[in-house]
Image 1: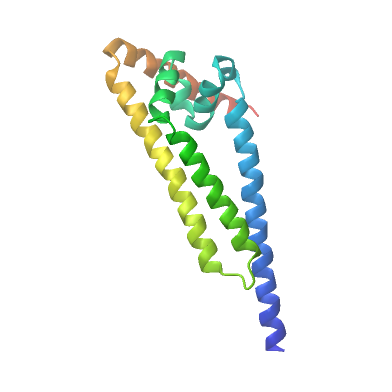
Image 2 (image 1 turned 90 degrees about the horizontal axis):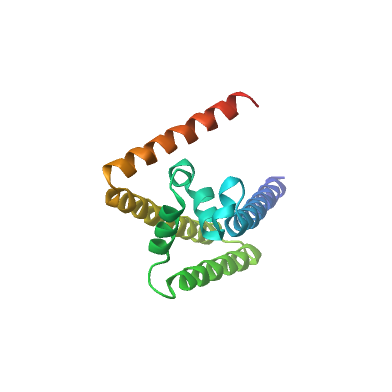
Length: 165
């Protein structure tokens, strides 16, 4: 009887992990589409502006078009760096798929793989944060005050929208 329960527990664990992987895949596809195409009013400023505005939230939506372009340029870094990051992420995802299909399933290996992917995303977030702060530091006092006004307006509109759904 305990053998059946142990086997059922393992089966449920595999189903839950497969479900998590599927959810991550769907989130990645949707996120990739938004990053590529953008949504909302900032998509008209070009694909990079739309990507930055969607990923950075109100802090980047409050930037003017030139500010978004400057931050995107800073984030791209050295020539070829973006392609190398994409290749590393693609390889990591392919390795995750192989880990999910491996028999026997190694939960520790999948955990390590997901932790590494989370670290990659965190590194990009930190780079975006640093690029935004550097851009803000380079602004004049008047430019920064105008940015603060736009940020305040964006947050006010967001709050108003949330309360009137």
